[in-house]
Image (cartoon, rainbow, N blue to C red; front, top):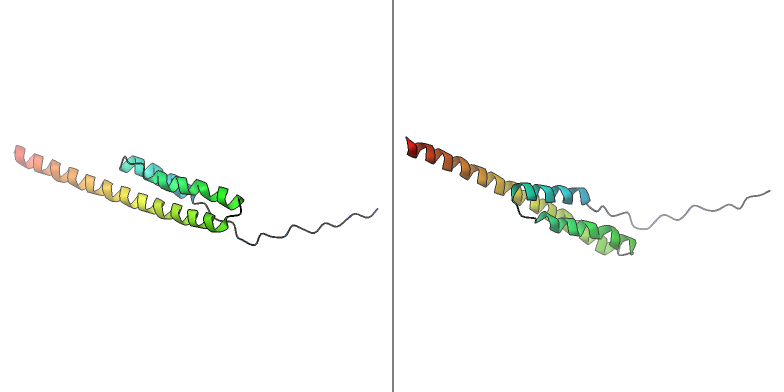
Length: 103
């Protein structure tokens, strides 16, 4: 009763590519909350392409899509937060000027 020895599968030559999907979802939610512009969806589109390209064997394309997803996510978060801060400051200035004018 001898069993055939099966060698373990060879490891993949390329390391798995991170898809940055969580960051893209956060960027989409932040951009919808603070700016009302869905520019975070661009990063979400690129993040969903990463796994499909990696499964098809296009590691370079998957890596590029992951980089674009991360870049657009951070751009979206920064633009949203800056827009929120500017709107908040303008609201404070407007309220202050309104209070001064009424007295």
